[in-house]
Length: 171
Image (cartoon, rainbow, N blue to C red; front, side, top):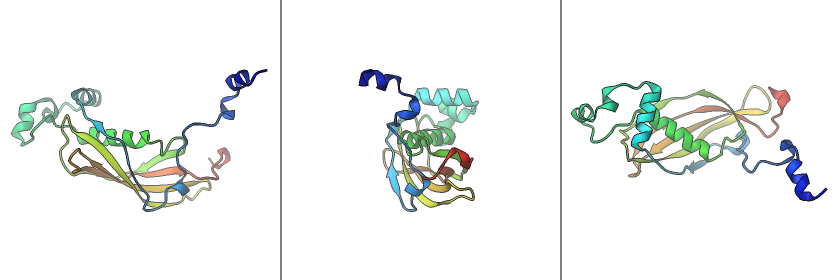
């Protein structure tokens, strides 16, 4: 049997993943990183407000939004959060190590419009073992910024994350 055949027929568990998320021990208090950037499109807005049922004139009617002092196609805070959370997950920091999203506080700091480009700055504010072995609780402060480096949204997720000694028996 050739090595090519062996590789092609190896069990999935025998092939190491290219990407592996961090364990809670690898997320010490004070750790900070930035995500990639993403521009919000009109399609993003329409898909989100249609899918989520956000049938509020503030998001559908540009004239209505302008009467409220907004200067463009306003994006719901929920969409801003979802985009930011997607940017965090795309870093692979939680790939295969995240176990649960436990709690969050969220504050909208400023408007987001179609055409704005967002990124997130993630800072670990607490990391500790949980009450069960093999896992930890990690709290972060995620600041979402636009292309002008203005803070537009801040949220503080609390997540349950696998530890280095996590095993199927720790469930």
